[in-house]
Length: 340
Ligand SMILES: NC(=O)c1ccc[n+]([C@@H]2O[C@H](COP(=O)([O-])OP(=O)(O)OC[C@H]3O[C@@H](n4cnc5c(N)ncnc54)[C@H](OP(=O)(O)O)[C@@H]3O)[C@@H](O)[C@H]2O)c1
Image 1 (cartoon, rainbow, N blue to C red):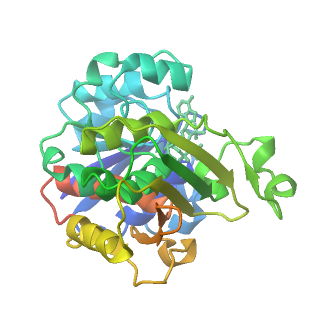
Image 2 (cartoon, rainbow, N blue to C red):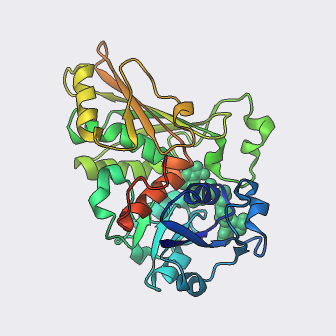
């Protein structure tokens, strides 16, 4: 049995982690933390979990948690948890961090995009980027796994096979992505109020979204080429789900069967990636509440472009499901344990 703690358990990704872990055969959840409501019963903040756990929310205390925890999931806003993560790692235990704090290797890039000073930059070199489909061999030995962002997971998985195989011009990529409102977490902000986002469809952070450097860094890692991305995210009036449409210039005339063969070669053995049949396009409903990423591609022969569509659930493969997938790999468990 692996003993687990969740730091920031009262939030959306913390709640999703608990929903996944309640059916995990090899895990026992020991501690759940909060900064605002220590002492509250877990079912008061997550009523769906009533009868699944007998736990009360606690304040974070690295030493107390470490006494009976093998791995802690940190599900805190960026810039909040990195000092605590360093403290917790010093006890000899492992961490999966769901925030952006350890995804970018260059501290200056992190501080420029996230507008906060990094509290534990020394750990950046050690952190392993936890995208199993691309970096699986690095994860089992890791002490600190940086769980990828939701837009980043969708976009990277959509484009990696094409960049890795040199099929597209890395300077020509445009991504148009849409997310459900839970992607912003439970915090209150005018943009996420019902009258603002219901029956509305808007772009935001146009070509300024914080996942851009993460996507560029990772696509460079897999392809060895510098990638320049144009990225436009949108908020869609639905609770969960991301659909990304990626467009890029083909380097030479290529038909869709060759593109499909590349995806099949790279992802054919992947448990959580589904290459859809020709003419069937990914949609958020098909991946909701699952750890799947649905992908399909088309070729625009008139303009020499490829179009790749990918959909996932931002709270599962885009966050907590992928975090559990990483934990499973870190501890030598079945990679799919607890996941659907
Ligand atoms: N939502 C998504 O789809 C998604 C996807 C991928 C990655 N992520 C990342 O995952 C992390 C968590 O996201 P979320 O959506 O779960 O956010 P959330 O719903 O806002 O929850 C944040 C959690 O952090 C705690 N918290 C907030 N401010 C804190 C502070 N100053 N000190 C200590 N604890 C604090 C909150 O607890 P209390 O209020 O009880 O103190 C809550 O448990 C973020 O870094 C986010 O970027 C989210």
